[in-house]
Image (tube, rainbow, N blue to C red; front, side):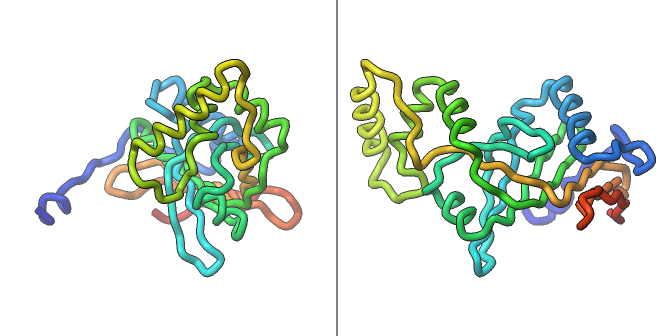
Length: 214
């Protein structure tokens, strides 16, 4: 079994990435790769790993969905009282990771997180399907529950409450904005000699571009 796992490998040959060709700003480069991912019809290109940790360094990671990005940062939404919400409150340093297998690409983002403005969270919450809005209210995310039926009963109760009116965003649910300080673009290459271009935000506010060894 272990030998078969060790034999699993793929040689990456689709593209290359050179520091002389990348955009001067990482958000511009991310925008180019984002458009490539969209045009390639990758399923859920906005799926990204969010890694958090406790103040004493215990890490955890999960997949969340990117909802927008601009010069201010990368936006996602979740329950503030979930495990990740508690860890974000205690330690704002996070990492995001996109893996676009079909393009043989990764993007790794290190930065700090803050809550999105209430208006942003309200606007997005109100744009969600009704079932998702009800679910955000009904689910005590990351808490231990006795069984599936408990969750379904909670959903039924919330749905019954809001038969005549639209549910409002609960205070414990909303957006987070990750402001990047480091962004690495990884392009798979043959023989594991991958291209890695690193953008680092300097103290002066400019971006330094460097190549990393694979």
